[in-house]
Image 1: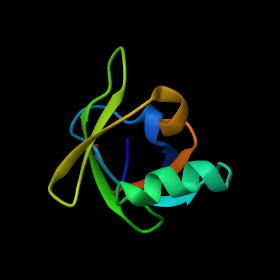
Image 2 (image 1 turned 90 degrees about the vertical axis):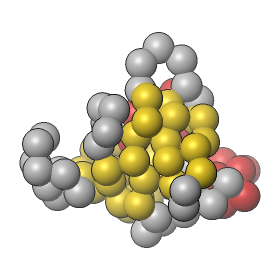
Image 3 (image 1 turned 45 degrees about the horizontal axis):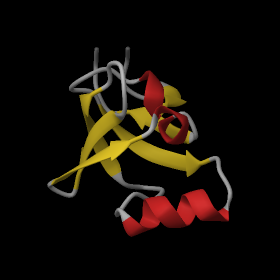
Length: 81
């Protein structure tokens, strides 16, 4: 993957960094994510993305997101892979 590629958070691999561009969900989802410090413009690093929840690091905290939630978060890669 190359820097600047736009994809969903659920598509990132372990260790990849990305900036959140959009949250494509309703008000409830946006509120849940905002309470966890996840919002548009935030930079996240994927800790784990295998079977089960997607673990991300954001603001020095590790947060688990269900695959469905992660699939509604559009991101831009910050890595040159």
